[in-house]
Length: 178
Image 1 (cartoon, rainbow, N blue to C red):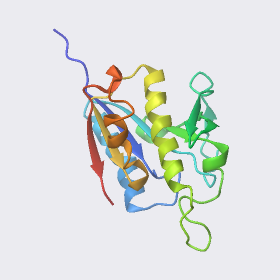
Image 2: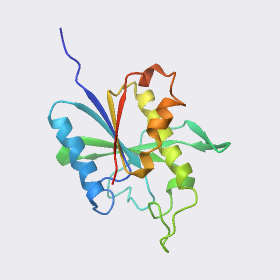
Image 3: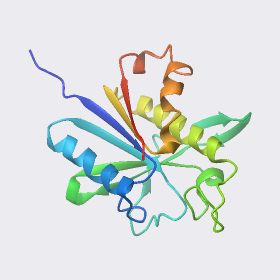
Image 4: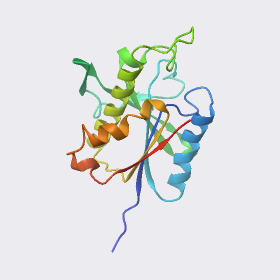
């Protein structure tokens, strides 16, 4: 009898080295690596904010995963999936991208420190985009570990929007608050 590796999906608001280093960014960079080094299978997702330099970080679009549209507030929004590697960790990071939600050169606040009015819609797009992409990968997570407020709606989405989806029927969720 062979045992399947446990599968852990990390969904993070930010990950070092793609954004300025923060305590959350460091945890979201090193925790998945540590879990992977202990023999677990991981996937890691974060938003592709406009301040992430695609050339320097070697992001490239994954055509086979992109091209889906998500409806948020009765409007169609194209989902673009990009990927990059952290070579020292032997770890890939998938980026959820959309011109309208993530092209601005900031994470959640404007230059005056005011929260963006569409942060909830951005969060919903990120969560749904991640869950749909994981399904498209054909990869079933045993555990989803959410990091940051932008991921906090995920448990609600699994209990409502994805409640009858067999892909996530046995998935457990952990939320880390910062």
